[in-house]
Length: 199
Image (cartoon, rainbow, N blue to C red; front, side, top):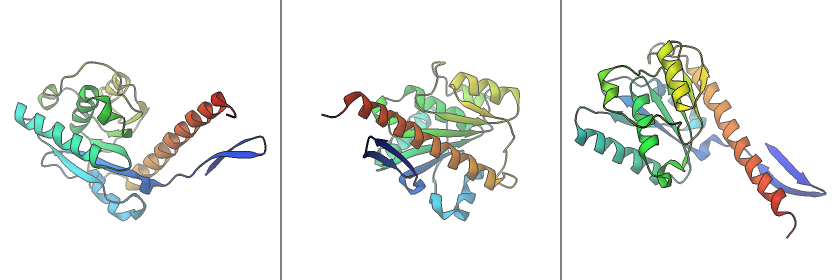
């Protein structure tokens, strides 16, 4: 919890509540999600999983529509989770979607992204930063390069499969990230309150 005071008055109080986030996980088609194990941590709730299929333009259009629908249906801020080749799909969606959709995304956790496969060439998008905070977790040069391209914070370390992914580490990264998002929003609100002053 964080409290801001102005003189003798409390002007804002922020409490991190991860139930106020909707987790949407993008997972390569036919892959086992490393995020499935969040069922062990009820505090987060279950992530909504979207399989990434991109063999045809129609599949990519359907994928974008599924992400749009999941994000817009949430009555809470969204955290995107993606693994492997699905990270390129998350970046593609974020870069090409209207602000009306991306504005509801508090951030993204992109684990072990792959950037050179033919699978990812279908997700070509302008090389600009993502429109929301993001973290890339990955040890190889390609993951690091993509993290820089996407404007992401980089965390070194492989998390490659559902069987070996250290769930506690993923959970800790998400908790720290959501705390940082809340702190950023509180700081922004506090600056607005300070600028307005007493009306």
